[in-house]
Picture (cartoon, rainbow, N blue to C red):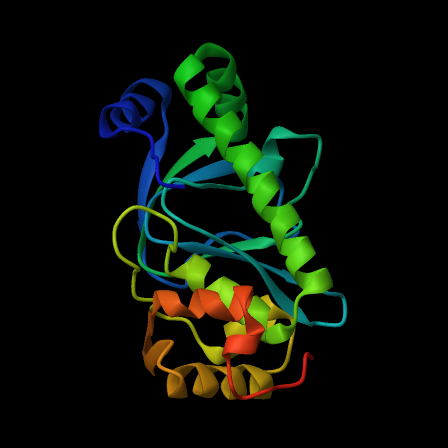
Length: 223
């Protein structure tokens, strides 16, 4: 999201409503799959990634929450435990709000209620787009879309560098193997669509992978 709660409003949440600001280093857990749903977090700075682990131990990356987003919103429902794990992907500043306090705030504060509703609606739209992407697009297109999203394509300002993103994490998010991710990343780099040396720099021309497969001269398998 390009919008965010104002600094003044965040201060009010802290001073008057008991929200707690936390500075979290990368890889810190906000909550873990299976824990009781007792808190929600607002991301002030940084990114938080959300993962799930199957009974067989297979992990999947299902989301990356940017600045201005919420994570742990299931605490506001009847869901008793978190069904996923939220971890600081980069160094983060987050606001932790107790579930009961957040429920009361949403009733009391029109500003927070409006912002939260807008966020949830946009998040739902994004999830639907993600499902459509997985159902109908090739692994290459899914990777291109995710790289553009991670670089904040479409937001105001220039494309951001993507840091701390490994090929293993991209494979989890795309739903393919690391070998395929490596193949596509090398291909994108040869075509000048990305620069990749630890930090990923994305060229807006990567959008052509999503819109026009025919413009790329190196055919690849769709899976």
